[in-house]
Length: 173
Image (cartoon, rainbow, N blue to C red; front, side, top):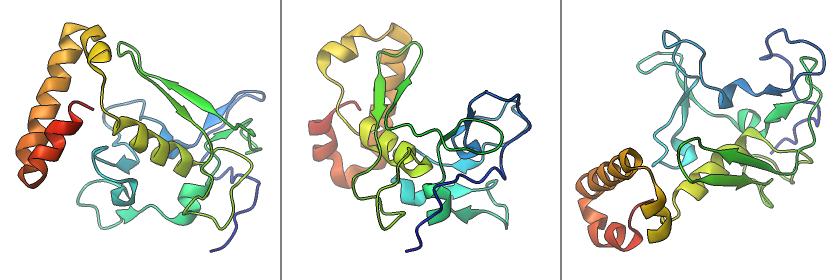
C-alpha cells in the first residue's frame, strides 16, 4: 500500500476565499438537485460498496485507497490539510451526533495519517449508524422522525429475511 502524501490534493477544490475551510467534495452534498451526488451509497451497506459517478454511468467506479486517504477537511483552497483529530457530525432535527476520529488501523493506508480522512468519515459514519437506538433516544425523536425510523426498520426486516431475528434483536438503528 502506498502512503499518501500528507499534503491534501487541491484538485477538487473550487475557488474559495483565503482562510475558509473546504470539505472534500466526496463528503459534500450537491448544491442543486440537478447534479447527482458524487457518492452512490446506501448507508445500510458497508463503505466498500460505495461507487463514484452516476447510476448506470460507464464511468462509475469504486472508491480507491487514494480517495479514502484524502484529507476530509482542508484549511484553504490551496489544499493545506487541517490537522483535525476529531470531528462531530450533528444532524438537525434528530437527537444524534456522531464523533469521528482517525482510524487506528485504516485499510486505506499502511499507517495512520495525522489528519481525518474521507475514509475515517465514511467508515466512522457507517459504524455509528449501525448502533441500536436506545428506547429513550427513540422516544425523544419528533413524531415524523419516529415514523420514518420505524418505516426504515420495517423495510430492513422485509429486505433481509435471512437475518430477521438478528435484526429484531438489534432493533431500530
